[in-house]
Length: 174
Image 1 (spheres, rainbow, N blue to C red):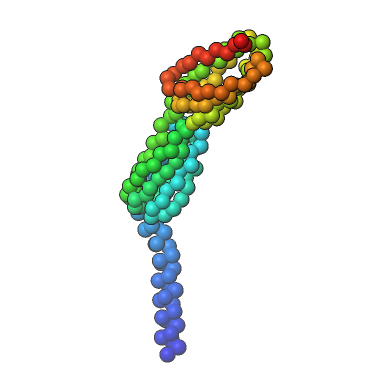
Image 2: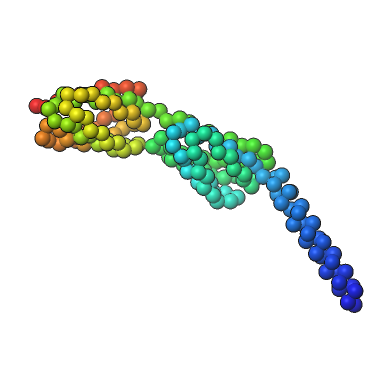
C-alpha cells in the first residue's frame, strides 16, 4: 500500500508540474492585445468593465495591454468630454483610438491701464494675466466657457463660445 501511495503522489506531483508550465502558455496564447493610440497631449485614464475590471493609463502615443477575450464597456474623459462604448476583445489585436483635441487660439488684447486677470471655466479651466496695453495668446479646448475678468478696478463675468480656430478678444477701460 505504501508503494502505491508513493506512486500516486509522484504522478500527481508530475501532473501539477506539467500544468504549472503549460497553463500560462495556453492562457497567454488566448489573450487579446489591446493597443490604445492616444493622440491627445495628456494621459487618458480608460476604465474597462467586463470579463475583468481594470484601468488603463494611456500616455500620449501608444499603450499596449493584454486582455482576456470578451466584451468590455469602456469609459474615459479626453478633450473635456466623456466617451463611452463597447470594446470586443477577441484573440489577437484590438485598437482603441483617442483623437487629438480640437483647440481654439484666443488673442487677448488689453487696452486698459491696469493688468487684466482672466479666468475661463469650461471643458478645461484656464487663468491668464495680461499686462496693460499688451496682447497675449491662449490656446484652449474648443467649447463653451464662462469667464470672470478683473481689470480697470472692476470685475465682469460672462460667457464666450470658442468653437472655431481663432478669436480676437479686446478689453479696455470705460
